[in-house]
Length: 415
Image (cartoon, rainbow, N blue to C red; front, side, top):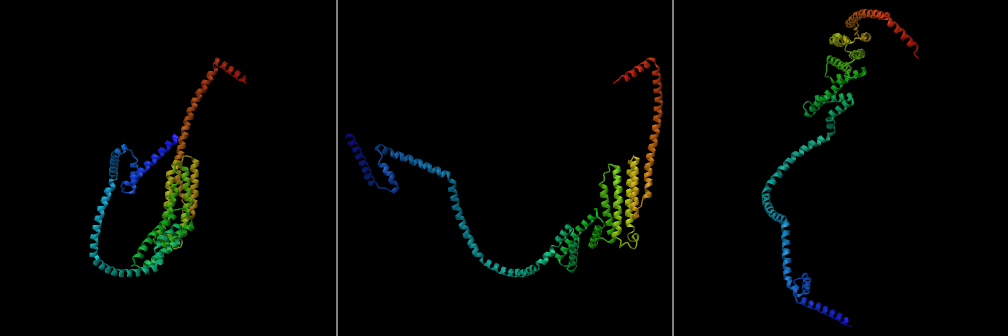
C-alpha cells in the first residue's frame, strides 16, 4: 500500500512539472517556431544549469564565430573570385555599351559595303558561268589530266603500246593548242614520263632477252623518236655490251680455269646472239651495205669484243701451270672461235701465239726441272754407291756376319 501511494505521488509530481513547463512556455514570447524546442529544454533545466547557461551560450557563440572565420579563411578564393567577377562584369557591360555606340556609327559603312558586295556578286556570277562550263566538260578535262598517270601505270605494267598511243595523242593536242598553258604543262609532264619509258626499255636491253623481245623494244624506241637510226644502233650495242660485262663481272676470278671457261662460254653463246640479233633487227636498213650505212659499226664493236677477249686470255693464261688445263682452255677457245665464225668472227688464227708463249714458258720450266732432276740423280747415284760399298765392307766383318745369321734364325722362329 505504501509503495502504491509513493508511485502515485511521483506520477502526480511529474504531471505537475510538465504542466508548469507548459504554462511557462506559453508565457515566453517565441521569435519563431524553430526556437520552441530550445525554450522547452530551457524550462526543464535546474536553477544551477540556468545560471550556467549564459556562459555556455557565450562559449558556443565564440566557437561558432571561430568556425565562421575558418570557413571564411578556407574559402577566401571564392570570395575574391566573386568580387573579381563582379568587377569584370561591370567592365564588360560598359565595354559592350561603348561598342554598341560604335556599331551604330558604322551602320552607314555597312550599307556601302553591301552595295559593293552586290557589285562583286555580279562578277562572281560571271565566273560561276565559266565554272559551270568547266563542270560540263569535267570528265573530258579529268581524262586529259590523268594521262600522265595512265602512262606511268602502263609503263609499270609493261603496256608500252598503250603508253605510246597516249604520248602521241598528247603530242597532237600540244600541236593544236600551242598557247594553252594547261596543254603545254601536260605535254611537258608526258615528255618526262616518256623519258622514264625510254630508260626502262634501255634497261631491258641490258638483260638476257631473246630476238623477239629485242625486236619489240627497238620498235618502241623507234616510236618514241628520240634517237636517230645510227644512234639507235649504237645504243643497242652499248646496252648489249653492258649485259655481257655484267655476266663477266659475276664470274669468280679466284679460280683462273673456271673464270676462263665461263668467259669463253659467255662469248661463244652471247656474242653470237648479239651479232645475230643486230643483223636481224636492222636487216631492212642494211640491205644496201652495212659498212656503207653505219661505218662498220657492228664490225668495230665485234672486233672490240674479240680484242678484249684476247687481252684477258693474254693476262690470265700465264697463271695456268698445268698442261691439261691449258689444253682444255685451248680446245674451248677454238670451239668458241669456230662457232663465231658463222657470223664472221672466226679468230682461231689469233689464238696460237697466245698459247705458244705460255707453252714455251711451261716447256722452259720443264727443261729446267729436268736438268735439276738429272743433277739430283747424279748426286744420289754417287751417294748410293758409297753407301753400298760401306755396307758390303761391314758385312765382311766376322762379328757382323755371325750376328746376321742369328737374326735370320730368330726371324724363322717367329710365330
